[in-house]
Image (cartoon, rainbow, N blue to C red; front, top):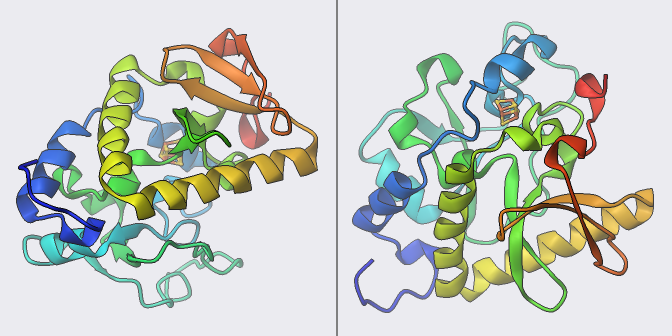
Length: 238
Ligand code: SF4
């Protein structure tokens, strides 16, 4: 990114975004994780690509860029799940905590995915940058609301080093550039800790030092573990 003054992610140009997308492009795992979770979804789609389960969020700059270059995305209307041939009974999950400056979008569906045109939020899923209470960006934490359906969350040992490195490279840059992004993920990390405190469980963390940890959400004390020993959830608990 050139030395311009960028105040919010809305200031990201098409060139900035292409560079971010090209950097953050490696698959999460050596295998196609969508083939692992889709059989558990009645729609047959990977859960994170199914609008009945997850509504992707984009920075307004991403929408400005992608709406001019591809027909992959449209603004989320709110009725996409209900109009599906076999709608899920639950209403689509729109994150009530969608940060300011982000908008919900919907895509053409996984069979028509254009990988070079995926949003940053698609590339990051099921992770977000975890920020400790003393403001350190420690690594990758999981979107806990998806732990019962997302195969990756139950198989963190399969996440490649390259994915972890490019995730951190991307978010270190965004968090350093934009205070509002840092504040949003600080708040999201607080929500994660509060959730696991309420469950009296430790949460998994893929640390930036390359290790895997279980973190006590109250004390934030970390215990290094063998990745294959991290907890499994939902469909994958057995
Ligand atoms: S990230 Fe999780 S929900 Fe998305 S395709 Fe992979 S296993 Fe399925």
